[in-house]
Length: 143
Image (cartoon, rainbow, N blue to C red; front, side, top):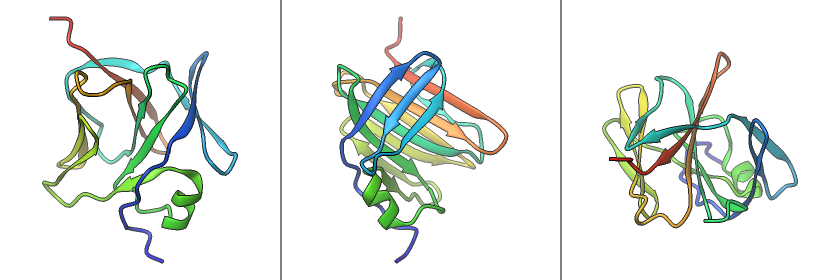
């Protein structure tokens, strides 16, 4: 089975805890994303070369959908058992992950935009590698 196909996400559990966000996969595992997420108004361009995970939650923040962007390491069958989705983008490509949430390639970075008037919940972006972890929440502009 190829490790580079798009995989649709399923609804998974989410828990906001002191110091971060816990995502509860279908297979019973939990992953902790360090935070708290930094609020970002408007679009976000991740640091280059990071693994990018986008989480869109329901309004209450107890469940959501998570999508990995350009993940080349996780096989399809693993994603399907966890409930996590994946989208593969080509150079200068764009995709809608969820109504109101789009991702696009921008050089070696990923750009994430959310129309929060369309999204009925919260949008988080996690960008990480072996050296660092970054957590963001896309929020309404205060202007």
